[in-house]
Length: 305
Image (cartoon, rainbow, N blue to C red; front, side, top):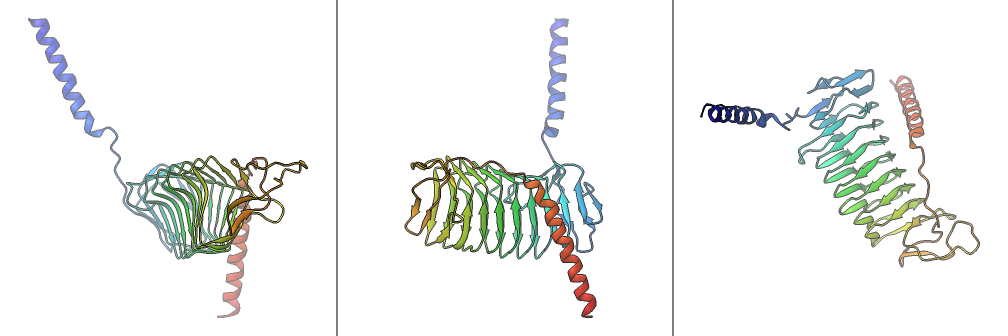
């Protein structure tokens, strides 16, 4: 009897300990909205280290970041920014010449929002498990390069002109990999667009240039609606894994066109997958361009008081 009582008491103690510990398992407290203010100060977290115009994460952050300052670099340093499925991850609204790199963004409504913002760089981030990975609206001359954009509903949504979507991996997005809506004069170059429900969806868009992309194993490679765009650069187009043509002269380009619809065709479909490009070299170029723009603006302001 004494042995049974001891065993029962021990089981009760174990159960009580488990009940006490259980509410604390897997619970992460949201940090609220974090701001990088126009004067450069950081509000809402102590996990971002500022060094001049460089802002580096020092730990994972649970909550959104709103950027209110131009000419800054946000370096995720491999850490995560995670949401609750409702808010947006990083918001640039009316902000120019910023860069966001090396950050993991997940579980947001939209991972990165760029709205009415120009000349920004989104480089080598992991953007997954959001409703939309990246949304560019009313924004020009932005570059999205070297990012892994996966397992979202929409990968990239683009609704303006003169932007560059280059050298990204856009994969396994349940609705669309890259969505162009009312967009024109954008460059979509060198992306791996694979295993999406629709690789590229183009709605009422003109004069975009789309080439050197790998379109592989998408349920629908491309869907267009009242659009006319260029699917090659006059010499080379895209690689389509469902292309049925041949290359009799062995120049690496198919001898017949890849037909999308009556207004859209790849005249020079590639026979081989395009190798990945080391997109990290674009960051120094972008920073040099940003620095030059700052110097020019300062000189203009001094010459015109």
